[in-house]
Image 1 (cartoon, rainbow, N blue to C red):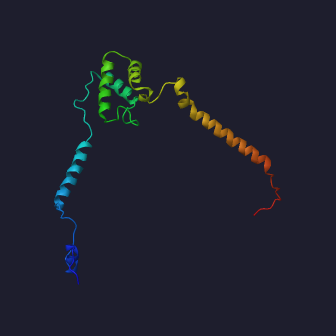
Image 2: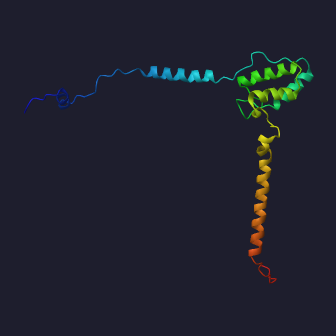
Image 3: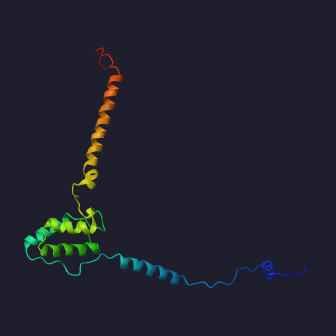
Length: 172
């Protein structure tokens, strides 16, 4: 029998485990620590933003007007929350801006116009009726009327096509 040229073949014959290139194994606790730090960093980033200083109102009338106005405005980041309900940082900033505009003496319509000029009609929960919003305002009504007309047409067509069965006066 010839001598083997490969040391791996010799090791296999003698029952030794053959491994690839020597790898250093990292301790499992190091991997666990890395995962824990990654998880904790996501928790730190997920904390809600708190307003640095709460808004101070001059009187109850100003507070009432402010709350009514921000309830009609949409948060530009959250999209399905009013400016009053949102905790996003931009909502805090917009609430401060609305209060500042009110204190400058602007009316509710002027405040809304300012925000629409800056963010578009999207910021209003109830967009104005104008040429660009007709589909939004009247589209559902048109679809409802079209659906009702289709149902009436189908019912009339079926009532003409199906003869009425004679009633022989029998009860079941």
